[in-house]
Each structure stands twice: as C-alpha cells, then as structure tokens.
Length: 336
Image 1 (cartoon, helix red, strand yellow):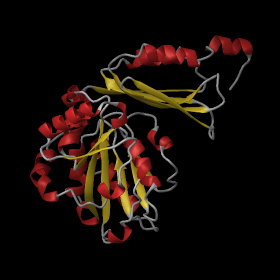
Image 2 (cartoon, rainbow, N blue to C red; image 1 turned 120 degrees about the horizontal axis):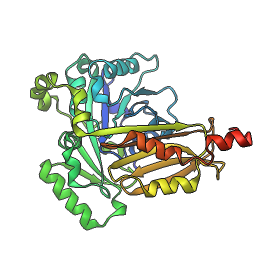
Image 3 (cartoon, rainbow, N blue to C red; image 1 turned 90 degrees about the horizontal axis):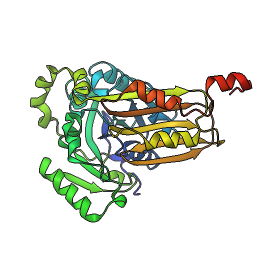
Image 4 (cartoon, rainbow, N blue to C red; image 1 turned 90 degrees about the vertical axis):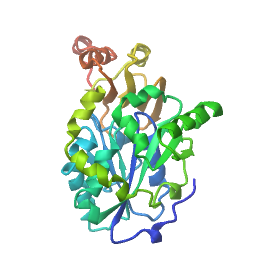
C-alpha cells in the first residue's frame, strides 16, 4: 500500500474529515485499519459507530489508544446535532492537535444526515468534509440491497466507491457491478481493491466533497425524522453475551441453520475446545474465525444484523450453543 504523504498539505485551520460508509460486511473496519497502519506521522483520530448494544468494531481495530471516540446510540445519523457534534468537538478540543478525523459509520447508516451535521451546524467553520468513501462487497452485493434507502444513499452520496473483495469473484462480475453502479450514479469514481487496500492519497485529503452540492438538501433534511429510517428499512440488531464457553460443534450447527434474513454477524467468541479468542465475522454466506490471545476476561459477545429478525429465537438458539447448561454446571461445580 502506498504510504500517506500528505501531512504538510492539510490545512491547519480546520480539521479534514473522511467518512467511511458502506453496507453491512463491506469491509469498512478493514479499510480503517489500513488507514491507521499507513498514516505514518499523521495524527489520525477515529470515530466508530455501533448499531447494537455491544461494541464489537472498536475491539477489532488496531490500537488507537486515546484517539478513538465511540458513538453507540444506534445509528450515527440519529445523533444529529447532538452526539456527533459533541464527539467531534471533543476531538477538536484535545491538547494534542489532531491532523485528520476518520468516521466509520454502521452499515445501516444513511450518510446524508451525517453530511448535514458537518455542513449545517457549527462544525462547518471548524472542519472540512473532505471525502465520503463507500465500500461495496462485490461478492455479496445484490440489487435488492437498494431496497434499503440507506444502502442506496451510500452509493449516491459517495465521492469514491471502493469495490472490495474483488479477489473472490470473476472479473466479469466486477465489470457488471461497476456498470450497475454507474447506472445509479453517473461518472462515479470507482476503485477496485482487495482487503481494503488502496493508496491513501486516493481517498484522503482529496477535496472531493463540494458543500454547494448538498446546500439544497439541508432544509429538506431538517424536516426529516432520522430515527424512523431504520424501522422503515426493517433492520434489527440482535446482541448476545454470555460468560460460559460455546461448543464449537454446536455453534457450527447454529450457523448451518441461520435464517437467510441475517445479513451480518460479528463477535468475540470463547470456545470450550480452544484456549484462544476467536474473532467471528459473517458477511452474507461467508464466515470466518480468526484467533488471538486472550487479554481480557473470557466471554462471548456477538451481534447479528438483518431484516425482521426474531430476536428471542436467535438468543435461544445461541444459548443452546453453550458447552454446558446451568444444570450441568451446578452438578459439576465447574466455574469460569
């Protein structure tokens, strides 16, 4: 990956902002990690938004220490003029100056209200909205995703469209998807990539976002109730935590019978059969389990996102994945 060599070009009077958006499982956190690893001397702050009760994404980031701010009140666009403004102001007020702020939205966030926050509040004089980067999972993308207003707006308002995971499909499929996106957004800036690897000067400090383009939309958006859009899209986030280990076999059976309306899953998992921490990622039909050494108390933390999910049933099925049930624990005096 090309190293970032733009530090001296960034205006010091305002803080530039890059927003990373994209549908569920498209690779936003992977791209954010690439930015953090290749930013060299650039002081980058990160704002991460979770859709759900458990903060998973921040645990999957490489260490950013104090330079990370979290918004966990559902979708980032539901915190317009309050939580988001406050979070950005906290970054601006730090004693150690920050050169750049990167915001990773949840996969069901509509980027337009976020844009409104930077262009229609006091942040307009304090920040510079530089670029909106939209990630697309070429393997799992289907036109039905655009039944979601949020997913459609992610493409329409993106300055740069990154077609990610191109190594998992044929070149012909990538060509077809690129043509389809161009039919939605004419003259789209499209970059093909794998594992979120893209030269950073292509997506940061590029000055693509033109405030005048969105000027006519701000008044209309003021009248829109952003909290309604998740319900209209039908998205549900189901979170599950436990302090007992899963059985790997039982969890595999659970995945084999997972409802088709689950689009995304991610979590930190503890298996009875292993001494390692397992990083769980589910995107479409593709599932992965990576391992790390435990540095925290062992537990299970998992989130599923989909349309019209039965939260009670999902949690019951996950409870059945435990290696031991409560009666067995009591009988054996086994503790964790």
